[in-house]
Amino acid sequence: MVFTRILLVFIMVVFSGENIAEGQKTYYEDRERGWYWYEEPPIEEDVEEAQKQKEMPSVVITSPSKSMSPAEIIKKQKELFENALAAAVINPTSENIREYLVISQQINGQAERFSDAFKKTIWMSPEFDYSLSGGRPTTTQAIAAYNQNQVKENYDDIYKIAQKKGIIYFFRSDCPYCARFSPILKQFASKFGFTVIPVAMDGKGTKEYPYPKRSDYMVSRLNVSVVPATFLVDPDTNSVSTIGYGYNDWTALLSKVLFANEQMEGVGDERIVLGDIR
Image 1: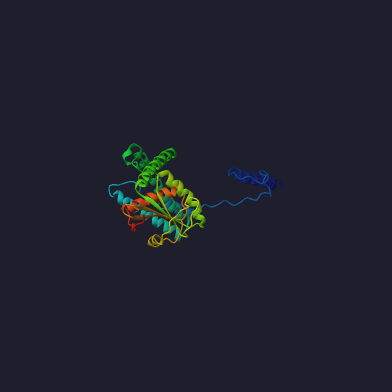
Image 2 (image 1 turned 60 degrees about the horizontal axis):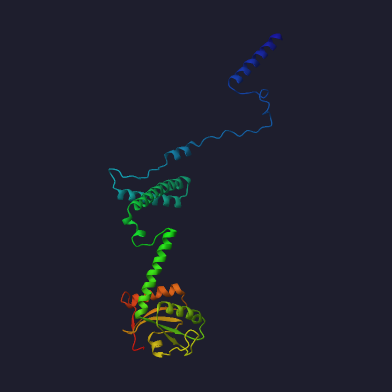
């Protein structure tokens, strides 16, 4: 009996020692866990998926090599990009989308480096700066200065046009648009020195133009069906060019007079020759 008890104690000591040696705690030694904790089984790494990610192609040519010209490199990049995009759209797996993003990022970075270098080269080469060689500037203050200078040049041109040409103005006394446009035209003509030939479609005058003409010939010849309507006229040649129809503010009227003069001078094709309108 005594021998049996000693043997049992010996067996318990041996097995408990093996457990401790292996780093495994018994219930009594790790009682905080006890029967109350549920432990998730260890997550097995997806070896196959990891291998796929590792073997994913990510080759994008971005710099010239001895075997390819820059044009060939760009062509290859375009081919890779289009293939990656098509693959991502047709089969939108994480691998395909990742490959598309890798190629896109690399091409975008290349474009950004080009843009940055391009801008810095322009800074050092004013002969290539469009905004300094007659083009429209881009900064706020420069735009303001440009607009101010442009307005002065336009005004100078309008003064010169007014010395040789006049404006034929078609209107009706009951037209609300004519009522708003007439004061603008009156001020415009007064500032630059234009002679205005008012033609009332209904034969009635207005406050700005109380004594208009009535000319069915001019209405028919210029095919006027919408009022207000304005035309630039050269009395020396009796040639006419359309300024515009409908209501126009000061700025629009100025631009349209300049354009009508270009048409009359032969820059464009629109030019009508009238009979005697004086």
